[in-house]
Length: 128
Length: 104
Image (spheres, rainbow over the protein chains, first blue to last red):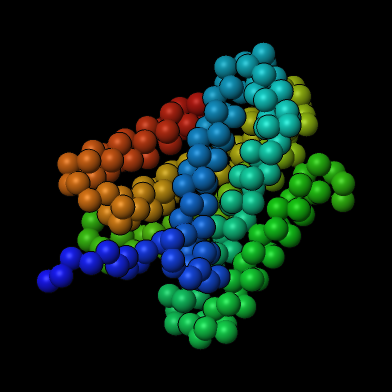
């Protein structure tokens, strides 16, 4: 066979991204981020168990600019993974496979996850 | 665990862990502005302890199955894959057990 330099499929640089493939990989990445979030929850419990000074230090870290940024990112990751997971469950039950439905449900996942994160922070911080 | 059983447990654990995740994030955001003295009430409440323990056991169980799938897809060297799976198993057991000890 002639050894040509054609790209081997799937070739990510020339692959045409669509909402389903983008959400599929984001679902996986969000799952891994959620695992990191669980480890943060563990640190939260651990610092509480270690006493007041350690817990106050934890609060300083999560209330810093970087801490808030990470926590908001974690909450979005959790929201996204939940809504995207519901979409996967619907697929498992045989619903929503049509391209138009899959595209619409994908957009709904993105909007819902952003809305849920915003509501979470507004409620949690007492703005509503 | 065979693949079908793994798939079923993965879906069941996902449905169980989702509301727990929502609850714990809301609690963390709520408590992030409260002092240690104010947080004691939450941490010592039996409902908090039960839900936290459930979150860690179910959450890490769900994560372990997911990690096995990811390793299966992206790691092609069998030895590295086996080591990664063992590390995931150790992580999914030790952290929930330590959490349980911390909460008792």
